[in-house]
Image (tube, rainbow, N blue to C red; front, side, top):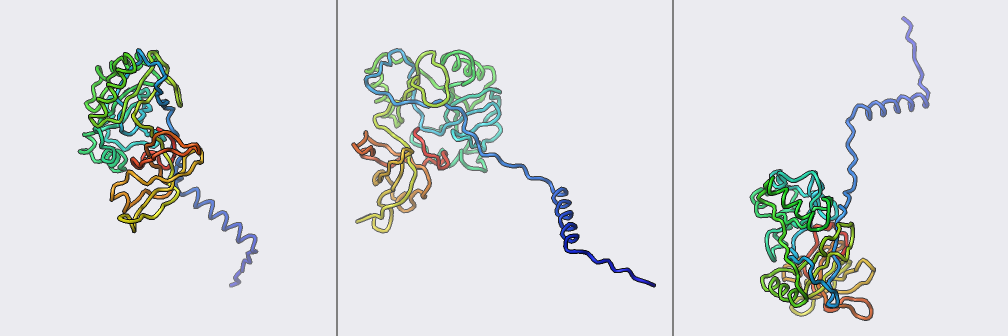
Length: 301
């Protein structure tokens, strides 16, 4: 019996190997490519100044919660990350966008964050959350018409976790200051003003103004200063950077637990301040909280 021996050249071996790789790739299921989340087209306020005439504008409380934008299909943060909410939370929501704030009460931001940013939703905890709706971006008409659309929708399609934000007419600056004092005395953050019949536009608009006794902004953590005295061995100050590149330190406003476990480098923090120095640095900057919902994107609120 004669045995034939086949000799394979190196090129032919490589050819067979490449065919095998192609076969394996075709046989395996393809994993979908995850696109980066896209920020929703939200409208943001400017800050009210005393010289601005706001007589006849709509006035409401500024809720210190987490911005929630209903796209018509899912509830996302201001940077486009989807909230993992229980299905019943968005039951009866319309197939058109809504804009509002996720909120559980005044001075409870840290607790709210732990609930709504959890990737495994705690349904019992979510029952405390309310969606405070203050606009319906794509509804027809001016501000009043859009808000009325949202109100009528939920009158016909109830959801116990939805609240349409109450607005009242601002008579003048004195009325504004009285309302601001009242809200802050109750632990609220401040007020929002809306121009009557104003449109909804993407980005900052002078048709919407925020009113507080202090200014606030966001900055990215870039380093630390060690503590001294009673703070030896823990955080003394955060070194931060504004979106315009200005760098400065925040040394006040921290709880002991925050000094022991400071915000990580690269995270975004919210701070309050009172104007700027000639060098463009915020005066009397004081730490407020970590902006976990921004996912390391520095932007003013």
